[in-house]
Length: 211
Image (tube, rainbow, N blue to C red):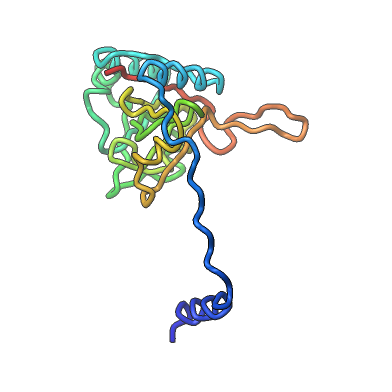
């Protein structure tokens, strides 16, 4: 018998004379009832309250806005699956600044710390909590690239904005590595002074692309 089987056997033995667990009531709200405009307005409101930069653009405005946000960056990193069209204007303005993180050649923590910004997509956002969720898809990459650089530029598509958490969870694969972002990284010290950049980027810019 393996150690795992031994432990499971002991657990079954310990629980043998206990009653079955009652069914958990799931009467919580599962649908926000908000339309697309309401979800977008609420998400923007929450993100601004969290001190994130927020811009709402159409598809044509995405590349110019990314280029604008990268103007002061000496270098930036992107995941291997990011759409090259998003970076067309940034590359035209100042080529040679982009670094790409791949599964075959991941950048080290020291290399990530040396870049000024990261550009990624996103999986799902929650309007009610102002939370952006990344799931390590090709246009989002490894968790490390969004935690080490000081500036995160995150693209959110309007169709990926859910009203409340249960709606968002139904769109996610829980077996994937999920990163949940609610504004720039921040905490408060013992004097309740806000400290930014503790466990992630100090600066978060969200670009919401309307359908």
